[in-house]
Amino acid sequence: MKIKMKLNGQEVGAAGGLDHLVLDQVKRSMQEKVAGLTCPEHMMAAVIQVNGESLSGLKVQIQACCDAMRQRVAKALA
Ligand SMILES: [Zn+2]
Image 1 (cartoon, rainbow, N blue to C red):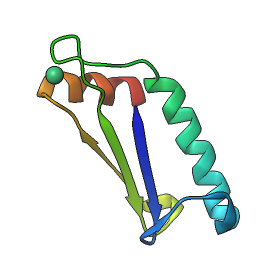
Image 2: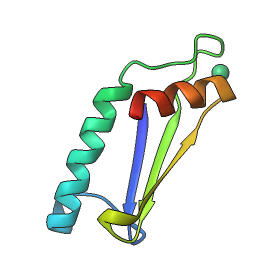
Image 3: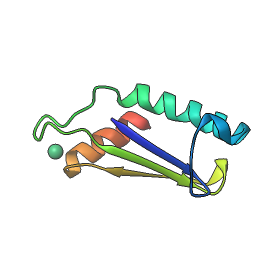
Image 4: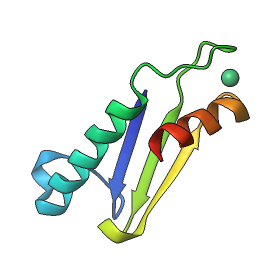
């Protein structure tokens, strides 16, 4: 599963300071939750996009092959 994470339009990475470090951990825990999750019907993994201007205002978008898969990912992340 691919997780793309951006803060203020910047890709989250180790060089981005404390906020990025926190986000990197969030990303890791998300990755653990959805690891190995693929759609049994379409054999596809979803892409998760997390964007926000601050740590408290993150928006999570799930791009999946179908609605069932999107719901499965959303449930795993909850
Ligand atoms: Zn599907």
